[in-house]
Amino acid sequence: MTDSSLLRTILRIDGWSTAVFGVVMLAGGQALSGPLGLPTAWSVPLGVAMLGGAAALGLIAGYPRIPARLGGYVVAGNALSCAGQLVLAFAGLIPLTGWGVAFMLAGAVVVAVFAIFQLVGLRQSLRAGGAAVAA
Image (cartoon, rainbow, N blue to C red; front, side):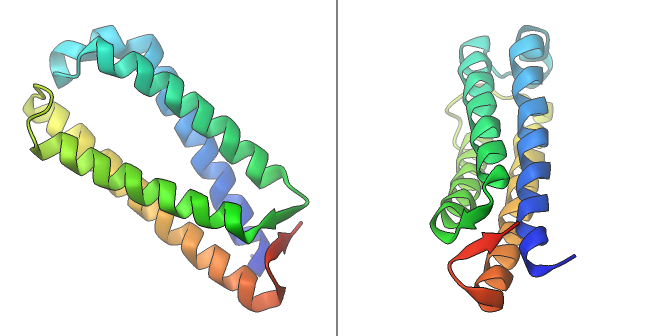
């Protein structure tokens, strides 16, 4: 994989997985409410937000040259998402079950891994030739 394609590929994978997560939260939020303890009042807005995030990731990955600033925003967004999921898992803000806590922890790990790979891809692209990643 070239320096420019790593960031683009990870953005696309992140976008598709975020879209799938958003659909699951919207379509299955009510069914998952009991096993996870995640109220539907949380899962529906979360699903909508995830679909919006997925669209943004797809747009960023589709740029002929990905601006480094946008890559940085994605890394920061995933880091904040990881932190938010950890807070939800342990702060008692919502009545999560054991499965719900595991679900939040798994989500935190996934977005942390995406953030790490995106940061690596961003740094490689910057070292390879400037502020934007070429297609």
